[in-house]
Length: 154
Image (cartoon, rainbow, N blue to C red; front, side, top):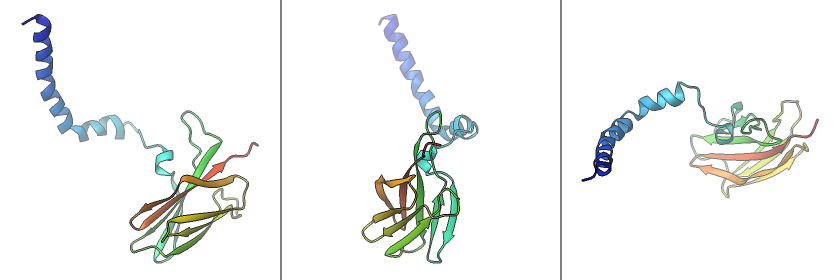
């Protein structure tokens, strides 16, 4: 056998135990490289921090902070996420009025039909554009909607 083949087979055989140790210690390595280093999920994935929770008894509504996060700086377009969560089934129709920017006036109204998983948006502010492409995201006893926003030039 040639020297290259011997080195190649030796490396392959040594690689198996190394991979097993890495896989078995995945929690340890994840803590070191990600959790302890401060790496976190993008707000574009999580929907942003929860700003307001409204409790309606049978269900609650969570309104998130607006997200305009870009790779290096904020972008002109973003969204605000709304979640409706219940221990049991959600009501058939839900109407929510939202002041996403905290200026004291309602920016949009959203009517959610949980039976058909459809939503209708009524914007009262020119920065509110439309429902996001996903429309209504459905989990067992939860519905999530993202409303697209666009910052106006100031």
